[in-house]
Structures are given as C-alpha cells and as structure tokens.
Length: 374
Image 1 (cartoon, one colour):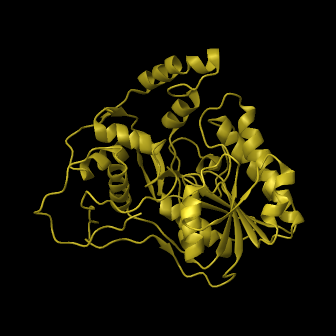
Image 2 (tube, rainbow, N blue to C red; image 1 turned 45 degrees about the vertical axis):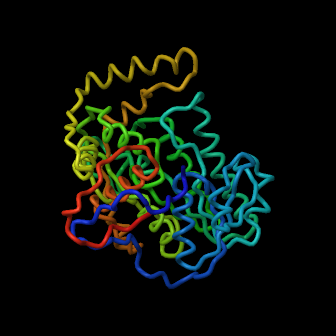
Image 3 (tube, one colour; image 1 turned 180 degrees about the vertical axis):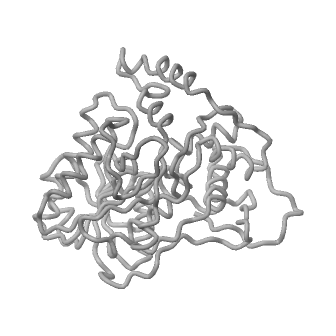
C-alpha cells in the first residue's frame, strides 16, 4: 500500500484547472550530488516517494528494512535493502557504513498505541539509536522527519518554525516527537541534523488516515466532518522537501512542509466535487464529536484494543492546525502542488486501487493534457 501506484488504465485522469500537468519540484540542488543515502522507514507510505525524489537528484539509496517488511516495491525498483531495527542499535552499524547521510522516516505515526511508552521507544529511542550509529560511522548529515504537530501553535493561530510552543500536547505521539527533536538538536556532535515538519499528508498510496477519510466521503458513508482548520501537504511535496533539505537545509534548522490551511470538511467536500459527486458533507457538532470519541475509545481503556477513534484523535481534530510552510519555499526552493492537482491525482489512485467507485469523465470534457500521475 505504501508504494506509488502505476497510472490508471480504466479511468481517464482528471486534468488540472489550467489543463497542464503540475510537477511538484524543488529548485536545482547544486551541492552534495551523488551521495549515498540510508533511508529508514523506506517501506512506509512516504518511503517510496522519498526514494524516487532522491534518485531523481542523482543519489544512491539504501533502505533499512525489518525482517517482516514487505520489500516488493524495493525489489521491483532495484533498491538496495539491508535488515536492521532502530530499537536494536547493534543492527544499525552495517546499515550506516559508507553512507554520507541518513534520512530517518521510521517511527510510530498514530494517535493510539497499546502503551503510551511505545511512542517514546520508537520515536525517541529509535531516533537516538540512528543518530548514534550515524555519528559512529562518520555520517555527515541526518534529516529527521518529524511532524507538524511539534510546532505547537495555539488554537486559531498560524504556526511557524519560530512559534513558542503551547504548554500542553494533544497526544503522546506529539510529545514523543517533541522529545526526539530536542534530543537530536541538543546533541552537539559533528553530525549535522536538519528537521522537517510535514503537515497532514495526503496523496496516492495512502488508504488509511486521510485516505480512509477520503474513501468514506467519496463513498457517501461519511456524511459529517469537523469544520476546524487543518494544515495539508501533498505527499510528493513532502518527498521533494526532504530531498532538498538533505542538501540545502541548514544544520539545526526546522522546515515546515505545509501548503494549504483549510478545514477537514472543506478538504473532503472539495474531493467530492472534483469527483463529480453530489454528496454534501455537513459540519459535525464538537460536543457530538467528543461524545463519539468517548464512547468509541472505551475498548482502548478496558481491553487495550484499538478504538474506532481515539481520544487523542478527537482532541487533535477539535484543536485543528494551521501552519506556514513558506520557509521551505524560500530556503529549500519547494514548489507546492495546487490542492486540486493533488486531490485529482489522489482520486485517480483511489479509483485505480479499487478503493472507491467514481464516475467516468464524459467525452465532452476539454481536450487537455492529463494531470501528472503518481
């Protein structure tokens, strides 16, 4: 599910508003070309896109995988892989050997875990283990893929890299990422650390999280959503931003990757409109949302079972997030994808993956070039 999908063969791709394909890209990167890069978390949703972006820039990639990882996409695309586990420091030495830099994607990205300590073991201890192995091997740079949630902006405020964090966290995930950033930035070693903070990611390859919400909205099963701002970013823009941070990011700096601030309701409704569907998504009452979260989180308290929706997910949804990603545009040369272009590519992937059944576009559409495929 994490691999970029081939172009659809049974449905005409939707065109961009201008009729021209938009290619998310960064300004040309001149330094540090043709490096050997280790990517952790390479088999996750984001990993294949990052590998493609790195290869596009001329780098050689090695993927860190666990014994249980699905390597089908890596093997099909002839990506070197090596077994290791970020929680087993002794397994990382061979992985970082000969690498010029490490991009650390691996971790626990979720709003719930059986034990809160799981977040800190994977996201903090794991990051520190990777850092220590990289430093011992003489690696020059570590790009840590954190989260936009660590910016910690107050409700109804727009966060930047210089925002003073609020004095509370919305989830254990957020706390763990904040702690990981602090541990890496306070290290003081010769290893250059650059941090990227993606907003809520959407795009092809994701059938959970945002993808699951899109599936619900496009199938008509999800009739309500919270009308609270969310910061969004297209998956290929995240990959491009990471690849650019590798060579253009300044040590010790953070870079928010965020292109649009609009409510989850507006985001889902726009996807429905682009799919030529007639569904209307209505705003959910915050009180009803809280009650829903309380009821459906009971199994997590009683039996340690995954809830339909966690209390943390409800808190995050009702608090919202607004982020300013302009620093990445200025310093990394990132060119964000227009929302409609990103959503159209996502719709095409969902349809091709048979996750949603969307109407075919009519023959009377303008004769434009198709939007870029992922």
